[in-house]
Amino acid sequence: MKNSIRKILIANRGEIALRIIRTLKEMKIISVAVYSEADRTSPHVLAADEAYLLGPAPSRQSYLVMDKIISVALSCGADAIHPGYGFLSENSVFAELCVKNNLIFIGPSAQAISAMGSKLAAKEAVSKYNIPMVPGSDGAISTIEEARKVTQSTGFPVLIKASAGGGGKGMRIVWKEDELEEQLKRASSEAASSFGDGSVFIEKYITSPRHIEIQVMGDHHGNVIYLFERECSIQRRYQKVIEEAPSCIITPEIRKKMGEAAVLSAKSCGYTNAGTVEFIMDEQHNFYFLEMNTRLQVEHPVTECITGLDLVREQIRIAEGHPLSVKQEDLTIHGHAIELRVCAEDPANNFLPSTGVLNRYKRPAGPGIRVDDGIEEGSEVSIYYDAMIAKLIVHASDRTQAIERMLRAISEYEITGVATTLPFGEYVLKHEAFVSGNFDTHFIQKHYQQEHLKKTVPSEIVELAAALSGHLYHKKEQAAEPIQETGEELSAWRNRRWE
Ligand code: ADP
Ligand code: ADP
Ligand code: MG
Picture 1: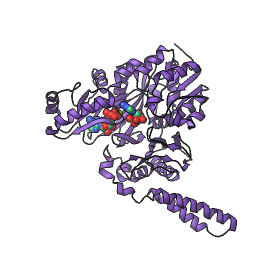
Picture 2: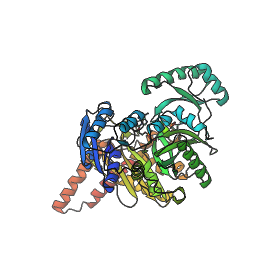
Picture 3: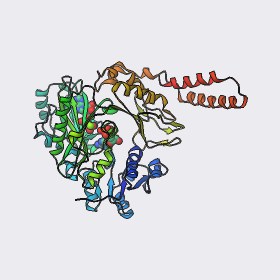
């Protein structure tokens, strides 16, 4: 079965839409953007060959309206839909709807999404393959008696998780027995209201874990390969902020074991296309299956750097029916890559979302630097969508040089108008725990206090300084006065705002 794809609709926005469009251009495939009223002039809209309005800004009225997206795809003559991540990417109903309308869904089958979409179903599917699981309940827990039975064997603390949870939401830690009943009630009612599915289950809470995940890729000819690991332990609110590949604690033996476990997980549900198997690793380096994400992942660029593959191109070729372009034994790791999620959040104020207009936006450049973004100078960062505005990715020959390169890139990156995670990134990359590789998912709780960034100069002053610097420069041009020093001092002072 080979279907040559001529035109693809990208059912997404922001950096990931733009990133997909770039590969389509290289492959000479026509790109179709869709957008909400808030995104009329966004870079993904301008970059695409064609663009169609979906509706008002809220995603429920635009990026999540399945019928509208399908009808746009059909009327513009698209052959396929790429869902990106978030939005409809893990929605089996949408995947099914595409197929019913003769559109290729660039991702796994609807059945594979259903099998892995809920954490409980995923655990059930992989449990037959001897893949290590976090000790805990076998299925959903609905009564306190069932919960007590589980905690008798796991002990405390435990984590109550929503089966349909995602994006770090729907988890509660229970430290001791007498909190169990109350937390179980809260977790189930929260899960029902937030995810429309009240099922929760219990896992032993691993106290000093690392989050390590394996990228997999499967074709329609029965081949599944693993593209090594990504270390994603630097997190806030159970969500990743910094990711790297490879992980500095993984030996070739563990890598092979985890890779093979990930391939088995994928095979357990006849998985095709790109996917990620997430594991949690304890201090003794035992790893346990967490969940499978049935889509292209935010942090896929670090894998692209170390393998030299374009994962979006692979996804499209697989969707066309081609076999994988590489074999497991041909894959090797080249150098080291690190990604920092540049989120419009204030790391000096509990990572609260920050909105505003990007008065100044200047990307870093030079050797080994990649910026995946979906914004421009003058863009508005609104409350409607995810706070991640860009991803800063560096690639170097080893981890030490990748850290040095990331620090240079951060110092070159200029963003004003919103607070971002750039200063937090700088803090982490200079920290001894990160540099030595001795960290876990609690880096923030253990090593970071907001005061570390409090020296931050308020943005009004930075803007004033920028204006003053421009004024001095102008004066210098006019009068050829020897004001070089003042200008340099100012720019050194501006750069120091991240310290
Ligand atoms: P990744 O594992 O790719 O890093 P994240 O967990 O950070 O994924 O989520 C990627 C995107 O998908 C984010 O925009 C996040 O908000 C969104 N997302 C993931 N799962 C859900 C969910 N269950 N409900 C709503 N949004 C989700
Ligand atoms: P999500 O769907 O929100 O991504 P995950 O199950 O992947 O949910 O977990 C997200 C994060 O929560 C992990 O990266 C890890 O930091 C933490 N976590 C999940 N399960 C456990 C556990 N059993 N013990 C300790 N931390 C956990
Ligand atoms: Mg996860």
